[in-house]
Length: 102
Image 1 (cartoon, rainbow, N blue to C red):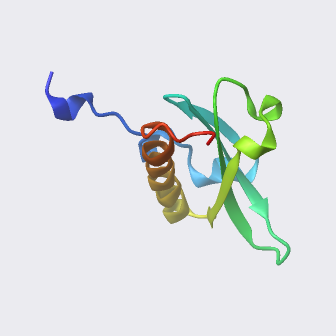
Image 2 (cartoon, rainbow, N blue to C red):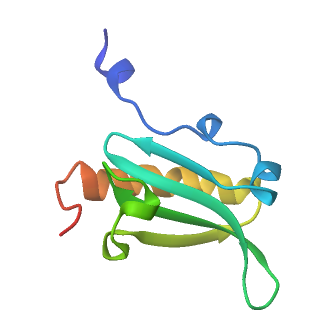
């Protein structure tokens, strides 16, 4: 197996179509990082994607809020592309480097 084929990241195809987030939220995990993606409406009535990450092993409701980090993205297919990039970068910076929860 080549080194290139061993590298695994979150792919855009791992996330649902944007219309999914109009009705419900998605919970996922990747190598110790848990995440939630949901559509929210801000005070101005603008729909956005909210991504929250936290370390495992606990689910969202059983993890202390101080361990959760959230980011907002456009509620669009381009926003989901940005979410994919964000999750991979967040994992690389916090989980692969060992700084999660510090």
